[in-house]
Amino acid sequence: MAFLKIIIATALIGYFLLSPAYAQEKSRDRDERVKKFLKENRQKWQDLNVPYEDGKVLHDLIVARNYRSALEIGTSTGHSTVWIAWALSKTGGKLVTLEIDPERQKTAIENVKKAGLSEFVDFRLGDAHTLAKEVKGPLDFVFSDADKGWYTQYFKDLSPKMSKGGTFTAHNVLQNISGIREFLEFVKSRPDYDTSIDRTSSSGISMSTKK
Image 1 (cartoon, rainbow, N blue to C red):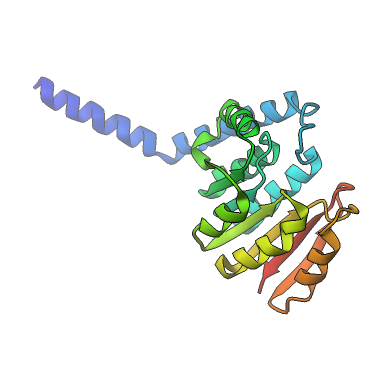
Image 2 (image 1 turned 90 degrees about the vertical axis):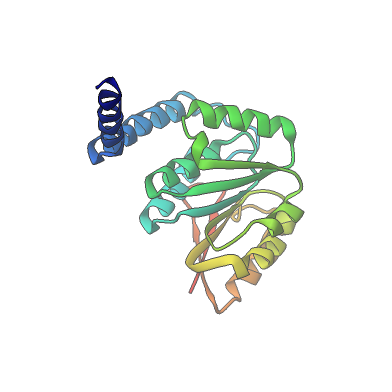
């Protein structure tokens, strides 16, 4: 009899955890936690991170297009990582993020943990020149925010892995940084991509969507 009660209790717990109401409540709780984290830390993202406004642009793009498989090149201390992972928590996706600096990655891991998004992020440490090539496709979304002089090569390496309708985004494209002009000329010349630039912030984000 006791064994039967255990089975019934386990079944009820499983049903509760899988119920739509529980999933919605969990999602709401996560959203509130992330919003609070981003609000409380809005002024601290100075270490090679994107502006708050650009983080929101990336988040909204992923959610609007229901992207699920994502790659970030250049984690830094995790501001854009939080925004991207938050979006993927809503679409059922996961992010692979690459960082060469172990101290920055360590801080990013802690920040993502504080935001309650660790389950949606795969952190990889090393040189993105090599690691990006090893990431398996198809990819719905790429955010490049590492060495600008390598943007074009990142695009070349990852383009074959991009899904149809997927978007390769790159940061700082409105700034006069070596490699940016060459990158923009290259992606705009690709007939298999539609490229536009989001000017929400002075940094600028290019968005190249595969046809």
